[in-house]
Amino acid sequence: MTNTQAEQAAAARRAEEGTAVEAGSKATERFTASGKLAKLEVPKERVSLLAGAAIKAINDIAVEHQVTYEEYNALKAWLIKVGTDGEWPLFLDVWLEHTIEDVNSKDRPGAASTIEGPYYVPGAPVLQTPATLEMREDEEGTPFLLKGRFTDTAGNPIQDAQVEIWHADAAGYYSQYAPGLPEWLFRATVKADENGYFEINTKRPAPYQIPTDGACGQLIAAAGWHAWRPAHIHIKVSAPGYQLVTQQLYFPGDPHNEDDIASAVKPELMLEPKPRADGGEGEEAVYDYVLAKEGEHK
Ligand code: MBD
Ligand code: FE
Image (tube, rainbow, N blue to C red; front, side):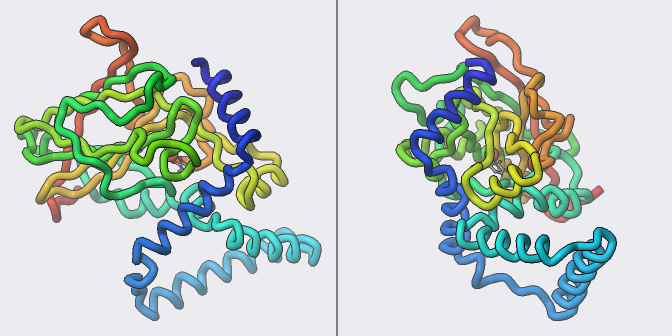
């Protein structure tokens, strides 16, 4: 499928189901159920510093741009809707997480990282390399083989490394967030071999439009922006004693690599797909991971 065809297919499915906002609000349900809410402790000094700075920044904007009561009330109504639509995780992951991620990864050597986004599900089925992700019969999309190797920052192979992988289908839908998909479709935990090599067979995901029928979509429409992310594969790589890396991999030539709504594309995350070396159908790409030991920094 071309990107345009995939975009049309995704739009058609969405129009038919009218449930895109479900995906956004499921991320809220999951975050709430994960127990993360109970564990978060931020010292009083940091709360005062950060909340104070945020409030000041917004007040400065109101002065600089002479915000009217019409605009103030539109903001109030919209903020209420973000909550009732359950789209706070979506909003934050799209428009803020990239900065949080940059701040927190700048001292870590090794593989490039980027945002997790709202659709990670821990505990995906464990597969040994060479692995094939769960798919439906006659799953659409170009077959895609991702392979690579884990080494430490000195170039030694890493044992017991794993790749957690999750991505959308060829219509841009994520399992467990869109209705009607198998639970673990395009989600797995793949164990590398004793020399750090891994191979994962899957299908190329489609470009992805964030849900357009909730508060985030309303903002995008009201501002005249677009809702697209380039096609991407989400990954978490880890090994005992090493620092976890969360990232996404992208495909050259995607029309949204330069204007990702989530600002999460980096040149180091670009794949170089080639025809399969074994003559099989589809493409393959090599992506090697250098992991930093716990406590290791630049
Ligand atoms: C996604 O799939 C995604 O990766 C991000 C960052 C935001 C919304 C949907
Ligand atoms: Fe995604």
